[in-house]
Length: 219
Image (cartoon, rainbow, N blue to C red):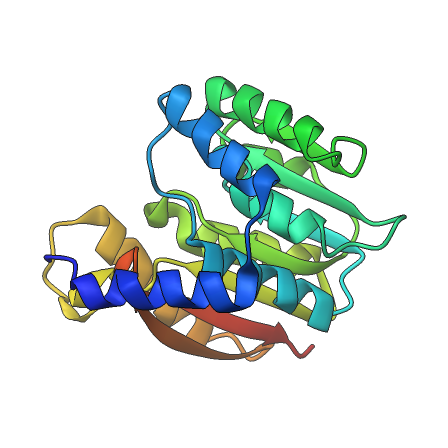
């Protein structure tokens, strides 16, 4: 899909009017690019949305599945109280090293633990209850991540999943794309899960046409 220039222009307008300049986040994106990380971070407006969701949830413990260079991690960690903690899971050691440097620059190294390895394996080593879970990793494993998020979430916790519209690809039941099939399986798993109250919202902007699942654990 070709990016509509108005989508990006509106994102720029939102950032200019509501977000303002942020030297730490700008440096994070620059460091990610210099290190050769893929340009798949959430947009600034989406990052601020995650920050606000964490604050609205009163989150004291946050779990993130998929760190990349730590852009969304920084926004989430900034929402934590002084004693709050965030655990973020990253498959690639190189990405994790870049994220740790970015978190240190942001003054958040003491609040965030970056765990390296396949998330399906590292999730199994975690215990305790989280107040918010953000899932933004390999899409074929979405259902596994959702199940682990439920295991690790307290009643009332918020679960957010990124990239669930995929430029409309989620409608294609016959798609050969494993990311689309993983996303469709996620919707099916949420629909069948009585402990979740959920919706999904479509987004357009600098990251083209996509969306988020927003869910609350009700039991």
